[in-house]
Image (cartoon, rainbow, N blue to C red; front, side, top):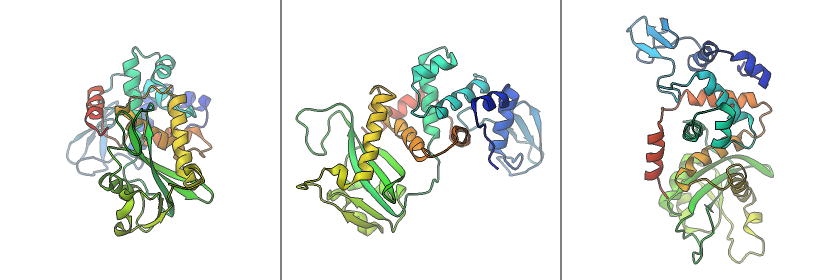
Length: 310
C-alpha cells in the first residue's frame, strides 16, 4: 500500500521534524531497506542522520546524494512544505506565492526551488502514449506582426501530443522545438508515442516520415475546411488552449520563453494526474521523482535555459 498523507492535518502530524522527513525519504529511496549504491549490498549501518555505510565495501551513502535535496542547507521540513504546497494547489503556484507561504528569504530562492521541482516532474522511462494520438504544434508568446504560418521571431514553438480516451483526452506530452521540421518533430513522436499507434495530424510535411517510422498516420487537412482546427483536432487544441490559459492565469503571462520547458513539465504532470482523488498521492509522486533526478543549481538552471532551443 502506498504511503502518503491524505490531508493537511495528516501532513502536519506525519512530518513534525527533520527525523520524520528523513525517515520518509529513506522509505522512498530504499523501500525494501538499505541498498548500497556502489555494490548493491543490503547490510549496512547508520553513521549519522542521513549517512549510511555499506557493510561490504564500506562505501558511505548519503540519503540525499544525487537528488534535488543534495547539499541543501534548508531543513527538509521546509522542502516538504514546498512539495506539499506545490502539489496541493490545483492550478500551481508562483515563486512569489511560495516565497510568502514558506517565508523564504528571497524571491530567487523560491524561483529556483520551483524550477528544481518542475524538472523532477518528468519521470525517466515513463510509458509512451498509445492508441490514437493527436499531434499538432502551437505558438506560446505575444502576438507578432508580419509573421505568418509556422514562422516565428520571438514566440516559442511547441509540439503537443494528446491521447484519445473515448471522446475525451487521456495522457499528454509536450515539448518546445526550434522549428516544425521533420528533424524536430520525429524525435518527439518516437519518444512520446508507441510505434503502431495511429497518429492524427494535419497535412504538414514535417509529419511525412511517420509511416516509415512504424506509425499509422491519419491526416486531416485543415486548410480550406469550414470547421475550425479546434473541431478537426479537438483534443490537442483543447490541451493547447488550457496550457495558454494556465500560463496567463497562474503565472500572469510572465513565463520567460527560455524557461518554458520547465513549465511544460509542470503542466503535463498536473494534467496527467488531474483525476487523482488525493493531493497526497501527487505529493508522493513528486517526492519519488525528486529522489530520482540529478541535483541542479541556480546557475545550471539559468545556463541550461540559455543554451536550449528557442
